[in-house]
Amino acid sequence: MTDPAAGSPLPGYPVPPATMTDLYELTMAAGYWKLGRTSDRAIFTLSFRQAPFGGGFTIAAGLASVIAFVEQFRFTPPELAHLAGLRGTDDRPLFEPAFLDFLGDLRLHVDIDAVPEGTVVFPHEPLLRVTGSLLEAQLLETALLNLVNFPTLAATKAAHVVLAAGGAPVLEFGLRRAQGPDGGLTASRAAYLGGCSATSNVLAGRLFGIPVRGTHAHSWVLSFASEQEAFDAWADVMPGNAVMLVDTYDSVEGVANAIDTGRRLRERGYRLAGIRLDSGDLAYLSTRARELLDAEGFEDTQIIASNDLDPETIESLQAQGARIDVWGVGTKLVTCYDQPALGGVYKLTAIRDGGDWRTPVKVSSDTAKITVPGELGVRRFYDADGTARADMIWDALHTVDGSRVIVDPADSHHRMTVESAWTAKEVLVPVFRDGERVYDVPPLEASRDHARHELGTLHPAILRQLRPHWYPAGLEWSLFQRREALIEAALAGEEPVRA
Image (cartoon, rainbow, N blue to C red; front, top):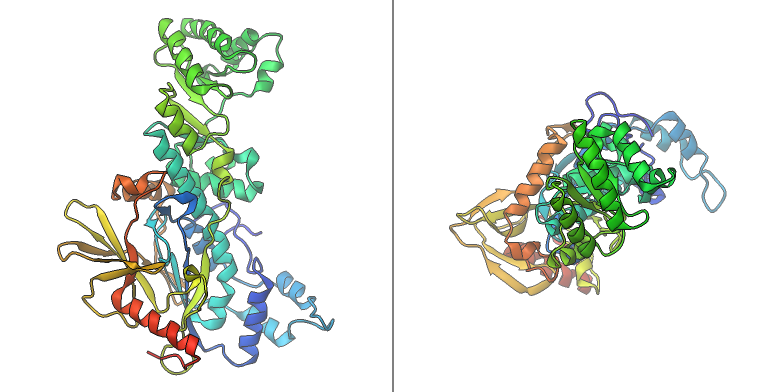
């Protein structure tokens, strides 16, 4: 990996090289080059088919990394030398030297429209739309999916955790369990975007400006002759960060020892900032800890809970009356434990090879995998109160102006008519034009605020974890009809219609 150039949306964060791709992207590019199709134009759309974690919404993330990658997309001499050494099944060089020379001179001239980070999105909607030469747009597929899929998944999981916490701060503690250092960094950034208040990941704090939190581990306590000695020593070395992990031996006794240390801190002008529970019955222990702390005048000492927490566990603890002020969530957040992949796809939705645009459709017996053709955009409709009421996926090549009927692409029986009083907003924004960036990347804090605002525009029934209400997001009526006609034509083996 190489360091990003000055002015990168992610200064200091490694940007993948052009060869972070699947081999078939390069073999297809070689085929387009060999056949003289480098001037063919294409539109690709990046989307996903189902909201993750059984939820009713998804938080878009990863655009800053996409921008950094596209801006620095180059095939370097070492990469080209590696490609020159690859061989086919006939044991001959896989790529012609002239094609590698072509790659060495290649500079992207694509147009990219995208959903800003932190935006709420729904299945089948374009998160990215790439327009450019067929060869260039194809080469971007694997990297764009890699840069969007996981951060979108992690930001969405973080939003679910934060919603479950009901306004209490959530700290992301997952670096040690993350899938490698790059997975840890990506997860920390996405978790903050999704609503977490801080991270334990010091590097993420340095690179992204995320607040960093942490105290001590069980090993600190075990390294002393007694728990009381360990707490007193911690208060001596870190009086301004006095949070005690109280469950090394017995949690209730640990709270009592922390209180004793807290008294000595007070005498020196400091305070017992918090205690942390990392095991056991968190509902009972937090309630008992609160009683002990309050009885000794430590009402402002926070109770922090960790221990493999997830949204369902947090909601259960809340329902049991747990007295927890701060939630520390690690493994099940950063690994997206219950659904490790978003399942995003990057599909060709329109192509022009010298004549008019053709909008092919991929047909499948699995209706969720049937593609949506066209130059796709999304219009979001709001009522007078600012509540998001419906999304319309529309095709700039064909959509009938003024159409107000939308159809769920996964179930054509789900239909609705957009009310005339609702106001519309385009969700995608221009990011690149002819390879030049035309979009100012917001600071991470602003994207985090945007995500919080976006969630606030949704009806609470859509936000709930268990059996969320369906948010209407579907195809504009004429796009739905055209897609049905293209499916029928493809099944009948007929020539696709051009725009």
